[in-house]
Amino acid sequence: MADNIFAKIITKEIPAKIVYEDERVLAFRDIGPKAPVHVLIVPKKEIARVSEATAADEALLGHLLTVAAEVARREGVDDTGYRLVINKGPHAGESVPHLHMHLLGGRPMAWPPG
Ligand code: DGP
Image (cartoon, rainbow, N blue to C red; front, side, top):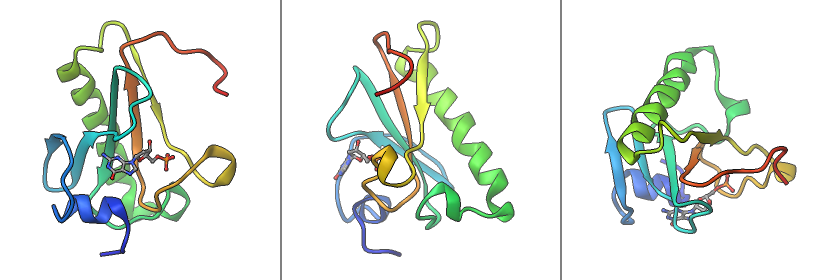
């Protein structure tokens, strides 16, 4: 496994507030929440960022979306709505080199994002 914070959360070397886990995916609360609900959905497979995923990862990428929708239901934001975000590269503010999807909800959000 790579030496980054999410790799260590996946192996449970570093604690996190886990809200969902299966054999392929872990979801946990963001340490600096930007909305009342801010959960990170992370593949356990080591994929640094979305541009490094391959055709072999397509089922896993789809699974991230269905897990996000399930976590949103559990968090009570399905009716009010939520935003799913993947940051890639410096202009988007990617800061951890392990693919992760942000689930943000619980308040209205502006569009376009800043
Ligand atoms: P991004 O900017 O898209 O790479 O998002 C990285 C997110 O990871 C950011 O919102 C803060 C969160 N984060 C960073 N370190 C930790 C940590 O140690 N624990 C948790 N739960 N979240 C973290």
